[in-house]
Image 1 (tube, rainbow, N blue to C red):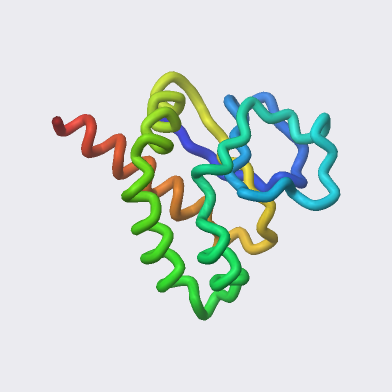
Image 2 (cartoon, rainbow, N blue to C red; image 1 turned 90 degrees about the vertical axis):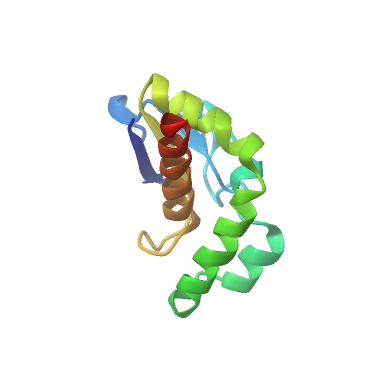
Length: 122
């Protein structure tokens, strides 16, 4: 199972597989045609309140991860189809954040991998 992460502002590549935007808001300045998306899954993004609270502050990263994981635990209906897509081929989670080390795509990917592992065990 391959789940890649990529900034929305980077050009699409043939090895991206299914490209899924996971931001609640459309990336600023990005034309829809240039995004080359297969799916826009707003429901997988952090809640508006959590997103505003975090404000991409690396000092809040650990707490953001905990809170977002908690939100994702209540959204298995949203995550399950992503796991199924990843089982069928490569998916790339597309996000707009500048910080590649402190963003919700990392947390979401880890949650998807955990869900897939649990499903394999059952």
